[in-house]
Image (cartoon, rainbow, N blue to C red; front, side, top):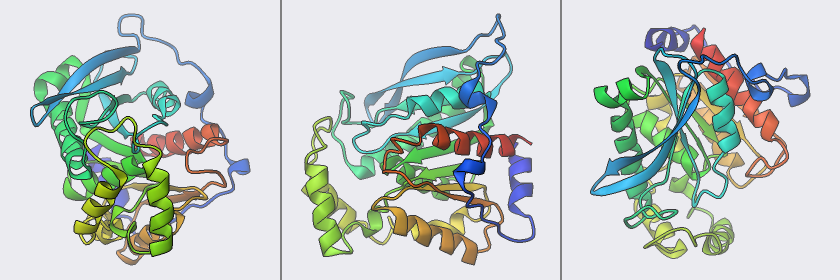
Length: 294
């Protein structure tokens, strides 16, 4: 798959697809259960992933079939009330394994949360999936690794892909740009108040401490600056009508300027969680993943 991904990325000129969702066909994996391999049926496997002395709670949705599968790491936001389990199920029906896990210091996983530690956690999860013993146990093809994330998870997906050239493709859904959350005082205040009400599942961090951490890393965490590192691989950007829309547009523009040969950009008229467009979101992601398999 890596060769196919690189071939796509080296096509002559960048292209962007922003299509009205009404004209979009819904892939069968979104709505139809597949034929099941009775010897190797789809399975939900609970597990833990070690990261800096902590065992992170995780599960992997194993696709049907005894062969090795491409694997999607699906990263939730902060704190992650929307886990996108519906998206995980559709991705598995499309023939991919899907890994979901909780970062250190979130949702009962031990440790103290920070945005920096979550970046480390994602790298450790990638290392876990590539380990030959784990790849054999969970029928993973480590050459077919894709990271997709929503909100803070979208930021993490972009960070990991920009720092690991062996990640095959990246999807960023309504991704927050941590490098810019302190840039506009009025928007910062609105975000800060919102975050203060949403951190109950987070251990060891406050909204103020997270904003201060983002300020310290503002230069390195501005995902628009990652365009050069991402330009050579397939990138999916899915925007919502939310506070992250302008930053997502800026990333798309930067990718085009850097000559990205395989970027797909989709805009959905919905809220940050895609609450009334979950089927549309699944359709966009599955359609994109199917293109990677061709």
